[in-house]
Amino acid sequence: MNTATGRAPEAGGKDASPARRPRVQKNVTTALGLDICSERYPVGTALPKESDLCELYGVSRTVVRESLKILATKGLVHSRPRVGTVVCDKAEWNLLDPQILEWMGPRIQDLDLLGCILETRRTVEPVAAEFAAERASVQEIADLEAAWTRMRDAGADTEAFTRADVQFHEILLKASHNQVFRQLSSIIHAALMYSLYRSNEALDHRDEALGIHRDLVEALRLRDKAAARAASHRMLDTAVRDLAPAMRGRRPDAEAS
Image 1 (cartoon, rainbow, N blue to C red):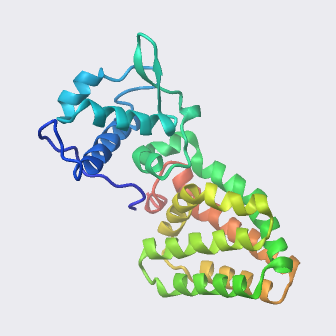
Image 2 (tube, one colour):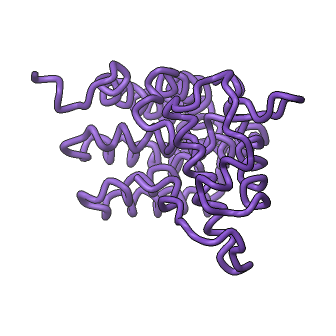
């Protein structure tokens, strides 16, 4: 799942050309982010000095400083006088950031992020579905059906299926015409992508999921608020079931072992 990118840091001269600097800076940011999230640099510890990081990655002090600023905006590090750059407590990390999700990898289980996302969806989505049944425009319902069609046509391509699935849920939140829900769709985009990918990855067959999504589209088309809420609840019930192995820290195929 390529929610964050960046190849390994390249060795080279410290005087990178302006055209190359963004890629070099991205590589350094990714390398440091991976080291923090893998606990090579645990919470509360200081990163190496800027001069040491320059030597380690073969880049200029400017590139290192730019990378540290990016990590600070994600809540991973902060500067302390006479101490340097220190790794923040995980409670301060922006866990909805797609790069952090990628850098955390399997360690994300330690923070129960999947459970937190499901709690949020259970609180919001059924209500949003009911509102959408009453308020969605004809175009929004058509957009929702188009997202469902892309899910259906994705076949065995989990990434394509998940992209369409995320679009489906984002359209649904926006179709509620609740301004907070609309904003939430962009805020939780990365977390929703992560959650749905893990859920979809667990499926051998997607017929059940496709059927429930289709039922929700039909409920909106018929302006049936109760049916829309019920379809959303069914959708979330299947997500809980499919994510259960991952939430226990095991892959789905480990159930039989």
